[in-house]
Image (tube, rainbow, N blue to C red; front, top):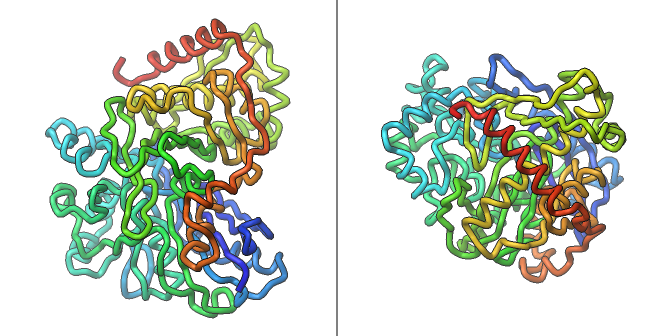
Length: 495
């Protein structure tokens, strides 16, 4: 058994990548699936789409490589975090569509928690904030709005899981109800110092303990797949939320190392070592990974819209046919026009945490066209990343001047990465393997299978494909950033 299969279940697509014993990618399969927007600020997925695309992409990756399932030593799973699935234990059938991490329907519930003085407890225990981004208020919403759900949950008939847990349940035929410490840490229900469910938080949110999965290490045994799914019973030996998996895939295993992943959203993580850092800049303190019962922590900044801004240009406005067109458009944009997009389509994340903010365009003229919109969409990613890095520097001085390792689909754009280096005033490193989320999941499965070394040795294998050095004059950098800050101030819901 010389292969490891990574399942990367993301927000807009699911992909499976088969890696060889050296963790080099061999074959890839990917499927997009529908997004559902039943009301303004609401985002849902059909859990059956997540399940179907997961099985089909895993089968396709194995078939493309021309190997048999019994040659796969283990599966590693990484997933969109915070997204909530509740299902019937007896049938495995979801009781409602999944409520996606981007969904803002519980903004009022979170506001009531803050007004009642509960956010201090939440932050102390979980490292998070009282924001609809996280899982707990989504679970409570389902229990309160799906007929009979609360009674069934109290009776132990329902199971909750982030997407990883739902997939493990299905893959193992309902034999395993488990999650890993990184996904548990994103629910508002887990004490990140012990990596255990917190009874006081469960009571605060009104969530029955019987619904919750067991919390395990990121590298460990999560059961074996039903043989008919892939053609053989394959052990599941690694799980991590997508951003934590990318942190491992980027080799950011030493304190002070930073990575930023550009997918639907953007998530920057700074390794802070063996103790959680209490943020004064409204960043998140979270578990980066847990191995052998020992936890490594990170400061995280979350941007809700990165690649989703490009998707909006394509699907919402119809001004581009594919994401790849944006670089050429941005390069051709009129430099005299300074169009700024604040992509608060589902609110603003760190460090603003404004659930009620909505997207805005500034600086429009009669001459504004697709080129300027494309440039504004790409630049918004760099501006938002700088917001995060500035906050990290305030919380943890060792972050100052650090190289930023980047990954995700948007990093294929040289223009975007150069602007990122320019607006940060710091080097940006793009790795040889840009699918670092899947690589991190594969690494965890390989680690538990005895096919990969400990994290410190693993990190030595990391290689840069290209370094982007800042080339923009400092006065121009600061002028552009000041214009961005002014645009954000105008967009906030409570200026």
